[in-house]
Length: 133
Image (cartoon, rainbow, N blue to C red; front, side, top):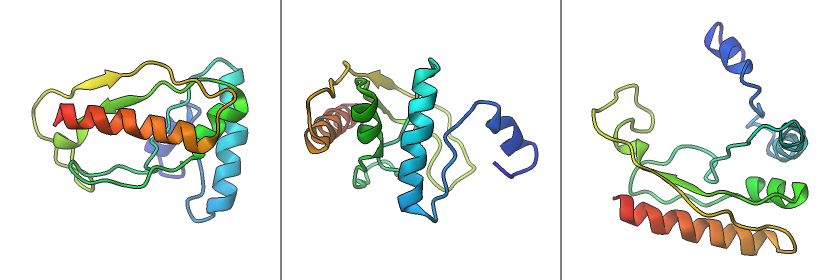
C-alpha cells in the first residue's frame, strides 16, 4: 500500500492489507477487516494458497478464508482459473490467450469444522484445475 501511485490507487479498493511478516497478527487482521467488509456489503476474495502458484504446482491451502467464512456465518464460493498460463508467477511478461474462470456452487460453512470446509474447497478447486489444464 505504500508504493506511490499504485499502492495509493489500490487502497481505494479497500483491500485487506496484511503484514506478511507477522503471520499471527495477519490472521487476526483478515478476520477483523474481512467481517467488516462483509458486513458493509462487499465481497472478500482470498486465494487459499496465500500467494500465486505456478501452473502445475501444488501449494498447501491455508485456512484464513475458511475461518472468516465460518466466523461470519457465510458460504464460500470457490473459483478456479488458469491465469497463471498467461501471466506466470514472478514475471512481468504476459502471454496471449484466453483465461478460463470457473465459479463453483456455494459451500456452506455453518455447523462445520474448518478442516471439513477446507477439504471440500480444496477438492473442488483442484478438481477444476485438472479440467482447466
